[in-house]
Image (cartoon, rainbow, N blue to C red):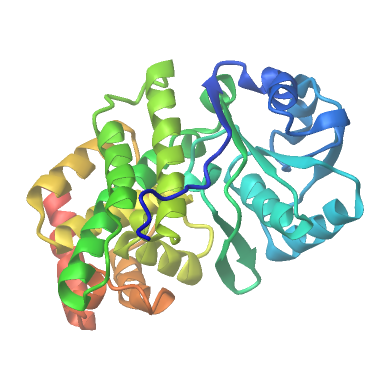
Length: 349
Ligand SMILES: [Zn+2]
């Protein structure tokens, strides 16, 4: 018998608004997510302590020091040892990534409470964690609920609050790479995942910026959630991660601490659009990153052209199984330098 539909694992509830954090308790009660107050809350080293009193929920609070794999494993063991019904990760990207991973290992549903919109991990089934020698991505469960507090996002540090613009628009580069792979290697493109990831990116491209209006922040939050859902649909990060993210992984490996996920994804996407000679996509992404004051050239993230070229050369090795424009071109070192030089000139001109 043929299947007539497919089932998707999706959050039960999405709540994006001003002051959403204060409503967390009633949201959990309404949806029976953590009955009897058996809730664990995880906060990061940043805004953590300031946020706890505004949550208005009874919960045991765990503080994490960083976004490390070791910390996530330790948290998972603590959560498993306790008698919790659910765990909420409250914070930016790192806190949410650690909590998603720990929740999977403790067998608990996870609630994602985002205080910045720095990347599309707020609703994705992927957790990125730091190791002593780089970062690794792990498949996890999608959050059962996603809460985005617009007041908190508006107050977040500039380079994190809306850097997710870069991550959202990088979907356009990721999908172009996916289509390239379909043509060159026969890889199957999942039409629904591509539709969700592309629509999310297009919605963000249309936002004027950089003012953090409720409308802009809501569209960005929704776009990042849709990107996460697209990954859940595809069963991999393919709809939101192509050569753009390979370049980001390479920069993180070679020059740790350079810039945030969203900033590097946007820069990588713009460079990949240049490599694809897609003038329309290049112009659209470039103007969007400029309006939102996000990096467009290596110097904007403190890298020299030579350092950036080295990262581009190293990028394919960060994800050997993923075919992108970088694998298609298979550039030599002098070719990479030439394309980087061209690229910087194209933006300056
Ligand atoms: Zn990303």
